[in-house]
Image (cartoon, rainbow, N blue to C red):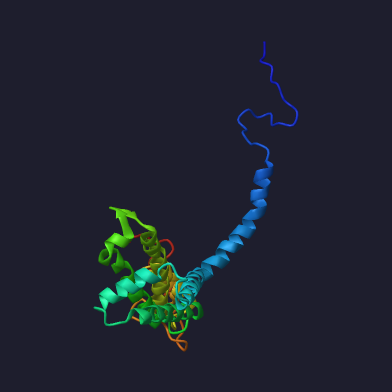
Amino acid sequence: MRPTRIVRRGRSADPTSSALPATGQGKLTDKCKPWLSAFCTAYQRREITVLRVSVGILYLWFGVLKFIPALSPAEDIATVVMSIMTFDAVPAEVTAPLLALMEVLIGIGLVTGRLLRLTLVTFFVHMAGVFVTLAIVPGAVWSHPLVPTLEGQYIIKNLVLVAACLSVAAAAVRGSRTAGVPEVQETALAAGIPAGLDTALDGNCPTCSGPYTASEARPAPTPPEPALAAPSLPVGSTARD
């Protein structure tokens, strides 16, 4: 007796077929993929700008608060640390306005992108002073070992701002290094392609250190040498003759 093969309506008769019908979630994901891809591509071009402006807004915001007495939660600890670091050379009533002015200027520089290098140097100097607080006044920032107080948490979260500005600084250095470089070559440098391997991308001369100039034509590939033809023998003659 031959085995009976059961075929269900609406499904493949091939028992090896495991294709499942698309669900509603799958259809929604497929529809969102082009939008997500476009968003990721657009954001990737502007991610450094987003980081820079975000940190700048925070500095502007918190810097303005320091101009108003008793409004910033970090005012007291900042005044104490500044007095210790300057050996009481800066009066307490001057410390808050100075810090506020520094943070506002850093915020303006980051938001606008003007004098970015000077702004980043000032930012890292300010961050160094902020993190020194963890060692200068440990009683105010640590309740137990590795257990920060509210002021300590306020300081430690600045690690995120430091990481963001490190990315901004790295992009600024990379941008100055690739200034005047063709776009394709800049893309290769950003991708981390070592020098010498991006010849096909940037048009560099393989025997010199720089790219071809605009007036120079890229040399055409050398054609292969023709094969030597075997000497012809007269008709009717042999190699022995």
